[in-house]
Length: 231
Image (cartoon, rainbow, N blue to C red):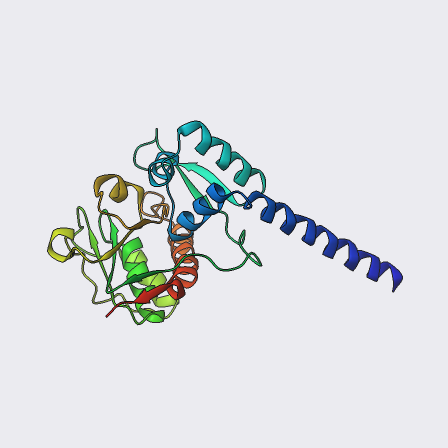
């Protein structure tokens, strides 16, 4: 029993130390502001610098600190491979408190073809939020990918009647626009937030579509409660 208690105490101590390091990393106002921005979606280092009016060397320093403490990760764009994005590491903010909120009258999820990821996002969002959501594509496909329909069905969401829509026919000036693929984000600069979700279509596997669905489900469940309905 003493051994069990010692193991428990060691685990608690390690958890406290980890949380203390994260809180220390976020004790700098610039890094805390970065975290607020990244809770809305993924951003490139240059996006962060523009938003915060910081030079690139300071952005790099702050990101190195956040990455060292396991708060953010960096990865390459699927569109422009020269471009990198930063995202919050899943679970990194557990027990760290609440972050910035925003308001919207409508959410528009935008991807390139509107055949899978943005359709997933729309269905997931409308299942949990009172703020209505639509989806569209910068270059919409003819039909929703049948593999996306199958995955959604397995998770209790019906995409059988969904049809890809052109962005220009739907977007409004007051929309909260969330791009869910890198190419759409790099094409359409009116984005409010960006979620860099890997495209499942090139792989074409069931696992790839399931992974995209799971990524979007996690993001929607975390973000929807923080987006407040505007009159």
